[in-house]
Length: 218
Image (cartoon, rainbow, N blue to C red; front, side, top):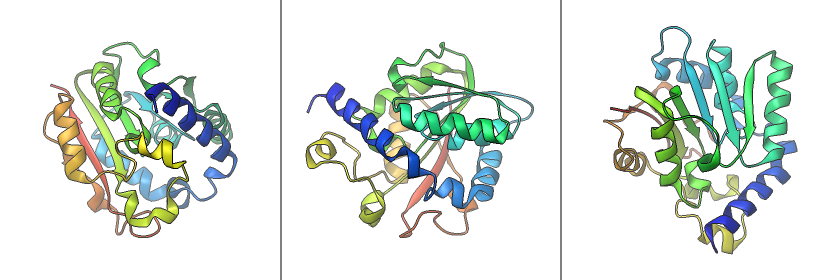
């Protein structure tokens, strides 16, 4: 399956799931924990420009906005963005959402202090392209935060992509922390720092091995 076709199918899939997604999402069930972890991992003093790539229903974007940052986010799924916009409105948070694939989003080079990608890399036809976009979008010294997990450990909680679509996604089984560290280095980031120890246990059902990593652009 060609990457463009795979991306379209991924976006359509998440649009179909969007209405019920937040009802079972970790960032909703454990909202306080996620907020505390991100607040610490951002290592930010004062207001920062934050970009959330593959924002979905706005998990990282809404947390960042609640911490007082200026936030933009993008996603290829209009259904997920509709949920994100509604959540922002309900919470009284100001987030600028853009309907766009990560590589095509209009964020100017060097326009962000922090870029977040949470549970995004596993579902992309070209995850390295997303990390390169993050690197381009960050200012020198800016911070990337990547969180993901080894979803094959608890397949019942994952997507139900078709076999053909799943086979076209190189990280469909998920990522380990070592995988993510290697990918961040390949994308040009410095040494990564882990933060998942701030969770008392995996925040996902099935005890999925997960990670939260940050690294800086040189």
